[in-house]
Image (cartoon, rainbow, N blue to C red; front, side, top):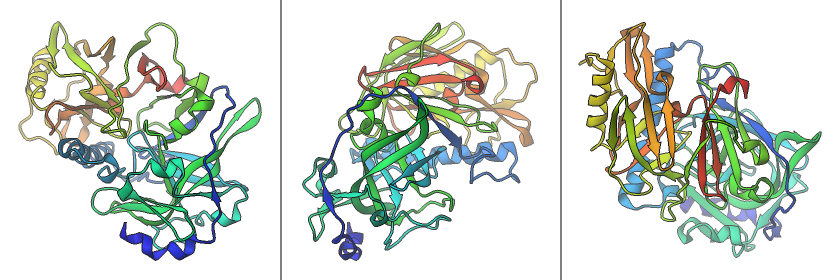
Length: 435
């Protein structure tokens, strides 16, 4: 919280307002999700080979997952440990009146919306002017006694000179965003019945001290939290959208954008839809938990033997992680079903690879969540590492006993719906290029 002393004087002239909730129900709408390695992304590096992009994405997964494991293992607050690491996906939105366009990391493992603001004590470089709250007719600062301010733990908030709420949202390795908690009109760039979808009085962090230990693009100006917490975008617009959102993820090499859908557009129907209970752990409110009962490989069923809430579903982690006590049996069964010889000299960070085959008899592989059998294709589980002429498994062992992560590669070409009110997650196989 030490950065707060630097900008307390800059905050005292900002107005105080109380939190207001939206009540009008909207029809569904969608927002583009840009994968960070897509040609549409500011992070895109055309000089990288597909194998190099895969390796970089895998390394980002590791840097993201290790803090998650540390969070759960040490019983620490997720907000003080999780690193967005550039995020796997980006989204555009507008904020303020008149509206100002922002490009932000979209993160299902975070609960706060924030952008860099002026006057800034410490901000990372961005190519667009900082958001200036005093030039927006719809900005209001929140008081330190307001309900949204009290959502922050005591060590992550304090009162400014004029009674305004000053927040601190910390990440691992001294990364932090800190500033004024306020409300503003947010526009997601979508239209319903030819009218722009606006969300007035949305709570956000006006970041005045933003120190990120990881590299970022100068196109990125903040972060949109899509987690289950009360200050996430999903929860704040829930009264208008029925607390539902869904996505259909494209391969990250695609020239198109994936879609993030809200409200009635988020609902998936038809043949092949399966649903499993959504578990929110109050001790770790940043994460969406499911229960993985078993994994089927061909005719073999591998029971996890774990308790309820043993897997996190996360679009921001590319790799899938399996409980370390379960992983060896999973790999041995997969190797037997594929009839392949494992490569000994493994490219980091993969744990199981084998020589590339043009024709591979791929067994039926399914993750059995409670009430939902999700069958995966080779593209959900294997990468081709071209310079080594091998296929590598996009599933690695978790370094935390009892916890797995169902990552974004496993979710490619699935419609995935989160229903926070109905407390369920639904899956349906799809061609995401056509949705």
